[in-house]
Length: 237
Length: 237
DNA sequence: CCAAAAGTGTTGCTTGTACACCCATGT
DNA sequence: ACATGGGTGTACAAGCAACACTTTTGG
Image (cartoon, rainbow over all chains, first blue to last red; front, side):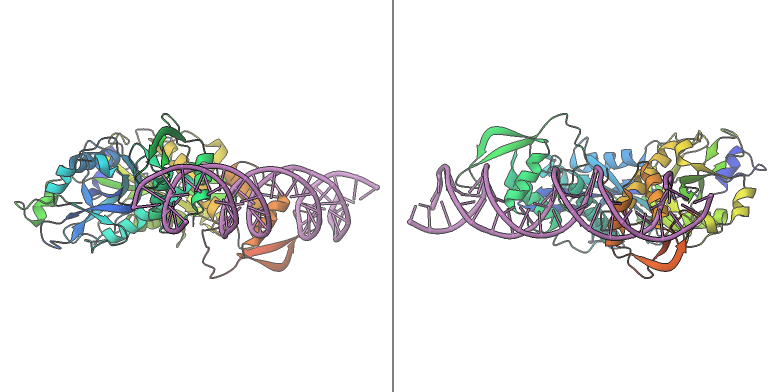
């Protein structure tokens, strides 16, 4: 981070260099009605007014980029302790026409069923199916593309769903989530066997009878399991 | 990146927020004498004088973080078009006691045999085997740990070596590289079959006779191959 | 009864892994 | 001759994918 330069004293070495706005932009994913969705906000001012934007904010003096992202998520969804993962930094000097802003991007997964819907609604935000995304400002489309492939990466080496599904879910719902993430189908029998083979789910003695005649057992994620991101769930690519 | 706020005009929205020093820190890996090595620089001034440091620099106004990393690499190794991959941002507000600096980190792979050895030597830099790294400044040890696991990730889903080995190499050398990266042994026969099964290497009609009695064919990476990071080379973890 | 999902079982193929075995040759 | 790595083959296990089949029950 620092070239040695013994003529300069301590603080001069930093002062030689420019400072930058650093933003965090979050690709917030949720799952609803069998679709993977992304939360976007309408930009309220020019340029690009009316275009859609990822939720973001600026990094302040006293916080890490992770803390900034958590703060933004709390402000916009009312949720604490959200699943957050650092993605790629986007930093082309001209990416934001308003100023030179370096953006650290994040993938956030939230359960649509428990977030603060009023908070989201009054900001004009909208959940967009990832298959039908609107035009976005700046390079946000590239950011989302990057976030999506990171999400697929995650879902392929570990079982995700704890962060996106309701507390209880059927294996069909979990499979539908994976089908939404990978935009392909999975064999129901094989998917079931694979998922149950890693010992991460716990079967409840309750059945969901609304989605099938026979009724399917609900499952939930075991507590205190170290999630082990080491099992291959699906082949990817 | 921006909350709507129609009272404020365009540029005020940015001016409300603080700016930050943004650094790039590169974990520069090379391969030599059967060992994976990391290039470190002695810090020339207090605090932490004498401790070792990753090579880094500050992001300037007119460059992306990738360009900044490339510039730093060129200045320190004399090499252009180095393999560079974004790793994680480190941003704890107190990570650098000199000032609040957000560091974007990179993994760089270079061929030790062709870099500018004089340039490196006169800066006091040293190639450290990754198994015997010295104490480093700030959070650089965490940065290196992160870089190492990213390197393993890369090596497990794609065939690396083009960036670390000489133009021509034997399969034993390639295997030794992988053994250095993963700190484990691989079965020579199985490794050979796996590596050759993805059609990325080209056998030359030259043999290396210095490392074995029988002599082993040299191989090189095929040109213009899209490197396809999609094949599993080794199981990881 | 039929459709539709739940759940289990079977089979064949691919891949990984351990290891045997011959080859070539410098010492 | 023998130790060493080069290179190939084999045999077994694990994982994956395709799909058959049985169960349950609402319409």
